[in-house]
Amino acid sequence: MGAFGSYVQNIKDAVATIFDGMAVTASHFVRKPYTVQYPDRMPVRVQDTLPFRYRGILEVDLEICTGCLACERACPIDCIVISCEKDPKTRSMVISQFDIDIAKCMFCGLCSEPCPTGSIHHTSEFEGADYSLESLIRRFVKEPVQAYKPKKGPETDPRIAPILSRGMRYINEFAQPGGEKPEDEAEG
Amino acid sequence: MSTLRTEEMTLNMGPQHPSTHGVLRFVIRADGEVMREAVPDVGYLHRSIEKIAEKVGYHGFMPYTDRVDYVCAMFTNQGWAMASERLAGIEVPRRGEYCRVIAAELNRIASHLISVGTMGMDIGAMTPFTHALREREMINDLIEELCGARLTFNYMRIGGVAWDLPPGWREKALAYLDHFDPILDEYNSLISYNKIYVERLANVGVITPEEAISYNLVGPNLRACGIKWDLRKDIPYSVYPDFEFDVPVGEGRWGTLGDSMDRYMVRIMEMKESSRILRQALQNLPSGPVLAKVPRNFKPPKGECQVRIESARGDMGWYVVSDGTGYPWRVHVRTGSFAAMGIVQKLSRGLMIADLVTLIASLDVIAPEIDR
Image (spheres, each protein chain N blue to C red):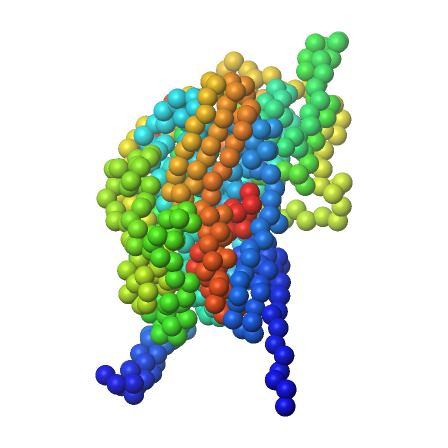
């Protein structure tokens, strides 16, 4: 093949391969669009479509917080500050401060893993923009509250039971060391 | 008439250049459009992650490993977990290893999709980038359901993984693979075989096999030079011996062996192989626990270890020295991007300035991985 031959061949190849690519592009005219317009034109809020394990902004259910400080110890960047003291009169634990610095938090989820009741957990909320760093510190304790004491049997208080069952559902999502959950067998 | 005086021009590219894949800076000495030399200047993204490990302990360092290489964070997770396990002699349950391989191979596809997508974008083809990102988005959705995050996964723990596969996830993943394999062929006809694209990449930045070895290239960059070296096959770790897969190498079909097109095609072929591994792993998933019993106050015995894993950017080494306390004495990460940056200066001699962008894209360097 001479110089002219390869010249023509090159043009032929270029046109043919570009046509191939264009055919793929053109086929997208009849396909369903993949993009969505966020946030105004969503049929449902994005937060409601997120999976249960989604690691959004942290939240604490003080009703079931035992004040064990496991989350504070697990946090690698110390963005959780808890103060607990014993009430000398009633001899029970009182939580007087539970602050989470959302600006510092890196959403790793290490704090919610050791929590015995699922009190500290990630929500599916992720829109946390604010005008100052100070307002990103979430202070969960408005006035000192008594720490939750896990009962021997199932929770009977109708106010706390639903919160605890949600918390336990969150905790049960985590893999148990050496253990196997019932739904694993159906899965595996 | 006197002749025009010419002189060498020193150009600065980056650190905020959009096509340098992060914060990367090159000092270019150029003669017109032709480069005499491009000297990479790394260190703009140094976050002293290795030092942080000495302060936060073994469990707490896991989320930081995500930040070593955020495009394929599963591999950095796995490297750190494996290093800690080897120090303490912990055995990971079989299902845990399978979960790790599944997550890691999904992540490899996602990482290569970014690589091949941005390759087109750096050259000027914007459409393939959106196609690649669309596919990656679906992987992100899968991983989000698995571990709750889309980029900084923090999925693995010392001794296994943090979450078991959710109910119905396996079918979703298999359905995704069924969708993905034809998409890859479509992607190839969209851009990979495009004559203009091939002409732009072929014979640019040719690395000979000898050079690749002497410059310590790893991963797809090394395999593109025709050297069949994959840690998953050659020094098997985890459960990779269970799976049947090929190691694609560059063939020089479009130009010279070891050119940018070869590096591009090796990544495309590797995605196919990852899909094969994923199918086998998802189908042969054993039952059992996914996490071994590891004390919360994790103190491995005195000693040191080096773990090598095949990340999306090649051989990633984790060197950990323990002094018997709850904090590692020293951690060092050996990453593929850093080695790849070393060869840029040599390859850039005589290259056009516009080809430098192609070269960086084809080496698939990720700035945070270079500096850590």
